[in-house]
View 1 (cartoon, rainbow, N blue to C red):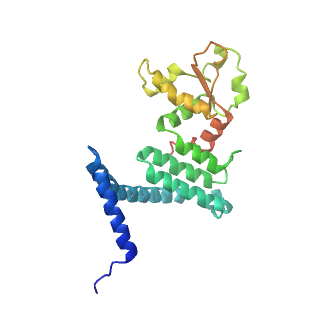
View 2: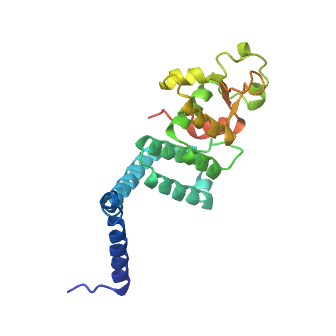
Length: 232
């Protein structure tokens, strides 16, 4: 039987045709944009969702039933977090960042999850961070562990900070930043502006920040969502 094109589908096709014509008319990039939006985007999104669901299922299969917060799984908060995570993964082109978001979601399902801030708030922050910023936070946490802001802030001298407070030079060496790579300070300044990282040297050695540590929010973010990130 011949399929009849409904009015709704006809209008949808007409809208797409108009949009595609408009995209293709853009000088230099029109053809590429048309291919990306109407040919490749759907395939990429579908592949990312499948990858996420397959790996999420694998991680969940590793959890014992006694480890799972069943009340949370049946809550509106979990539904909201799950939907937000799927949307974030669909939009994220970096595979490593998608893996981080997936593992963070699994962390929120465990009974052992403990944080003063809401799970949705912490996941929203995590989604907004770059891979480099996440690496900086994890490196700082590996240095000073679960020590709180008050302890770190009250360290009196450079000698007291050895092996605890992270210097910019250490970050350069750890992540292979080239000498003179002070453009990376933008990543650190952003973390400071969000209240995730603080400059221990502020007010001590002039105006140039070189010593960094996690605030209580940064500590909580890493401990609750990123501490076991390297586990397979």
